Image (tube, rainbow, N blue to C red):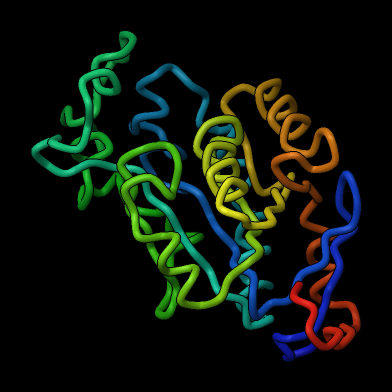
Length: 239
């Protein structure tokens, strides 16, 4: 695998090829937290089958390992709230009739509260030194967070996404990123929903009308791009 970060790689993506350079690209892993992925957390309290989300963990882990090995930068996000719930509006906390609400005590501590065991990223995808962890109070990773400033400091222009759930926090963040000028690609088998039909619809929406929100590609295509010979970036052209 090439160690050069400033060379062009191209992912065989939909609706067309996605060129990028590692130096200006971040892998963003959305909300792979115990509260969403494991039994006893917020996802399960809503009556969802968390096994659907657990199924993507091996793919996401392999993709994360390859990205790190290539020298790419990683951003992890966690959805959660302050212990006093001052950043959790009633419209979010009181909606529906879950068995446990945000802030209630659960098997992994208080549901979706920062610092509780359930708020943590699952061990298989745990951050390492040098990777950014963004704690977000909402669905999108740009709302109420320093994410944009962190990307600007590193001159990041392209974002690759994995995580959960496809149609909520992942798609919301991709739309936020698109509005801020980032080129975004969703790794198809590195994301999942509690509702498979919602995932399929979200991917169609993302790549419709000439990648109106972004591109999609399977992890195999991303791995192939990481391992393929890279070409130098033409002078004066950004990936």
